[in-house]
Image 1: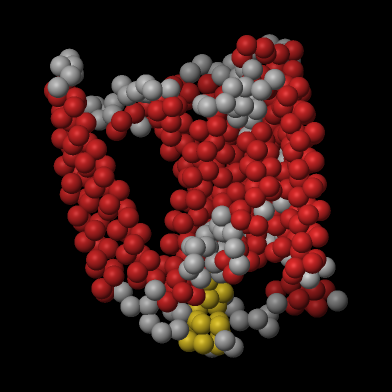
Image 2: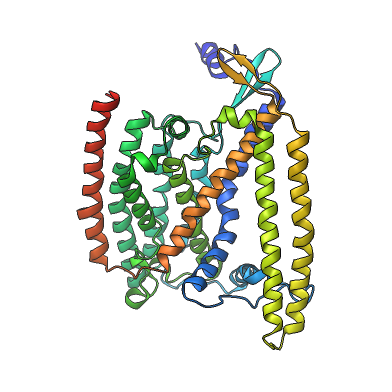
Length: 461
C-alpha cells in the first residue's frame, strides 16, 4: 500500500521535467517580488500625482552626491525616506503586549508576498522536449480554486491590523483597529459577490481560465460593468485608502491602529499598504481587463509574430526615453531663466540626464529594428490542432504578456492615487452605509441579472 502511494505521488509514468522546465518553474517565484519592486515606483507616483493635482512641485530636493547632485525629479527622495526609517529610534511601549506588537507589522507585508502566487502572469508555455510536449503554467500555484485561495490569503492581512491595534494597548489604536476590521469584513462581502457574475460566465474559479475566456470573448469590464464598479470600490476600501481611511482619521483617532509604531515597524505598514494596492490593481486587470491578453491578439497569434511584438515593446520604450529627453531639455531651458541660486547644479544634472537619455533612446530604437528584422519565430508544429512553437518563442511571448499585465496594473495604481487626492474622507457611518446598503445590493442584483441573461442567451446552467 505504501509503495502504491509513493508511486502515485511521484507519478513515475509521466515524463520527467527538462532542465528548461525546472529553470522556468523556479524562475516564476521571482514574481512574488513584483509588488515589492512596485512600492518604490508607487511612492514616487503618489507624491508626484498629489503635487500635480494640488498644483505644486512635490519633493524635489533630495539628491545623490554625483554629477552635482542628481535628483531624478524627486525619485531620490524615496531612498532618503528608507534611510530615515531604518535609522530612526524604535521602541516598544511599556504596557504593550511585546510579542504580538513585534509580529503584527510583518503579517500584512508577508501576505503581499503570497498572493502573487495565484495570479496568471502569462499564458501556459508549451514546446517540444525530446519525445513529449513540455508545459509550464503561467501561475506559481495553478489551482482550480485560485481566486478563492487568493481571497483567503489576502484576508489574513486583517489579523495584522487587529493584532497591532490590540497589542499596542492604546485606546486610540484599538478604536482604529476596530474600525478597520469592521470595514474590511463589510466590504469583503460585496467584493466576493461582485465577482460571481464573471465566474458564472467563465465557468471557473481558475484565474488562468478566466483570462483565457476573456481572450476568446470579451473583457470582463464590458460584460460586467456593475461588478467592476463594485469590486473597484470595495478594493479601495479594503486597502484603507482615502476616502475610506476612517481607521487613520488623524483629526479623530490620531493615525489609528499603527499609532504606537515608529521606524521600520511603521515602514512595514507603510509598504504593505502600497503592496496591497499593487496586488489589487493586478487582480482588477486580470479579472476585468483581460489580464496578460492583448486586445484582438490571441496567444497563438502573438507567438507567431513575437518578433513584431518585441519590436513594438522596445520601440515604445525607446520612444518613452526620447520623450524624457525632450522633457529634460525643456526643463533645462526653463530653469536657466529662473535665476535660481542652484542654477549651476541643476544645469549639470539636466545635462547628464539629457546626455544619457539622448544616447539610450536611439540605442533602444536600433535594438527594436534589429529584433524586427533578425528574429524569426519559425513555423509552429501542429499537434492535435494546437500549434507548438519553439521554447524561445513561448518565453519571449510570455515576457511581452508580463509587460502588458504590468502596464494595465499601472493604470489602476494611478486610479488609486487620483481617488485619494480628489475625494474627501467619508464619515464612518457613511462608509458602512455605502458597503451594506448600496454596494451589497448592487452586487446581488448584478448576480441575479447575470444569471438570468446567461441562462437565456448562452444556456449556462
